[in-house]
Length: 125
Image (cartoon, rainbow, N blue to C red):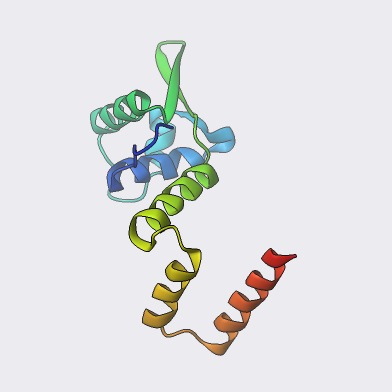
């Protein structure tokens, strides 16, 4: 995955479908089947996969007469990179500022606050 090469909403949905397949691999019909409704046309999916290939998120190989697509970027890796960019861009690289932003705007239950405190304590060990 290239730096500053975020996925659009539609590209992310395609990747979500691909990530959900066994071994994060499949043919276009498999990816369409895993895609939420309304499902895109075959040609639309083909176009998205071509774009994702150009961006370095997927690779393809010919199996029989069809292209078989494989995710080159794992969901966790994309999430980590994306969230790091959000933290750096909007919160000056401060995790405390990011957490504070959401904590102040969300109505957190005591249970959620306790969970956050536990996560922070575990991270300090």
